[in-house]
Length: 369
Image 1 (cartoon, helix red, strand yellow):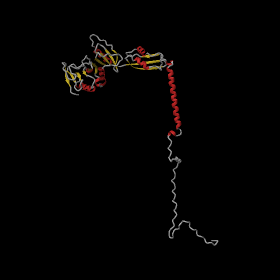
Image 2 (spheres, one colour):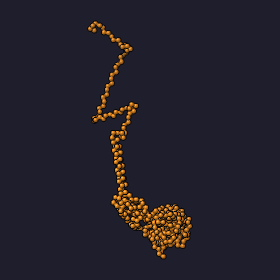
Image 3 (cartoon, rainbow, N blue to C red):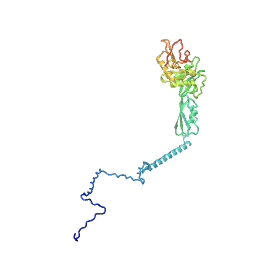
Image 4 (tube, rainbow, N blue to C red):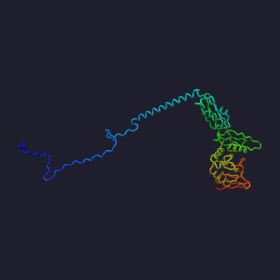
């Protein structure tokens, strides 16, 4: 050195050991080469959503639609709209009630149309529209009840003609059958729903048969004829039928299919167990009580098809043992369908379906169907 001093050797720090002679010094580790990031795609970059942890370390959930900005406005608008609609309905109701009890639409004219059995005057008289009624407060239920005191009235509708006219339209009850009572020459109209309507005006001469006249009237009207109804049955106009035997006839009419029912021109209803019918061909059919109707119908259809044009009588009271009667000559055909009183009841055959004897025809029984 310039001052003549010898350079002193620095002592190694305490605790540090020098490598022993002959040992290689450890190399310093070289830094790893950096990898260049991949180039980003062109276009605007989207900011990354930041998740903030709560003090407890939980990540907060996203807000639902109800809590999003603007949802409160939608709710408020819905509430306001509901209030407005309710207010308008309330105003309309109040207005209707006010008009109902003001003379603005007071009924001063009632229009009616006559039906086949009810005149215009009768309809207006029966209706009894209360004085002071308006087109808005007319009690239609009460007026309908008044009109239905006439059993011909089936249904009623109302048409309002502002400012002061109501039109009442009456639809008549349809006739279901003409019923011939066994006592006297009395014939009644039976309406749909098994409701008595009124007696039918059929004039019977000294040499006339009430059954024949009633059959002609029923066929002209396109309805069923029911004969031999017990004298114990007393019809009352406007009341429902209260008769087991007529209920049985109704059951046959409701449950028979078109193939058989279209051939029937009349029923005989002497008793519950002796219900019968007459076909257009004149064949008399003994049906018995209204049980096993479908089985009886099937057996009857089978016999009618097998002996077409040869039958005069069929008994299916017991469908497993039916009986029938055939004409005994090729020159004799079936009848005309005109009902003979009591002809539908088999006087010679037993109730269990056994065959009887007849001078005018062949009898036969058929095995189980």
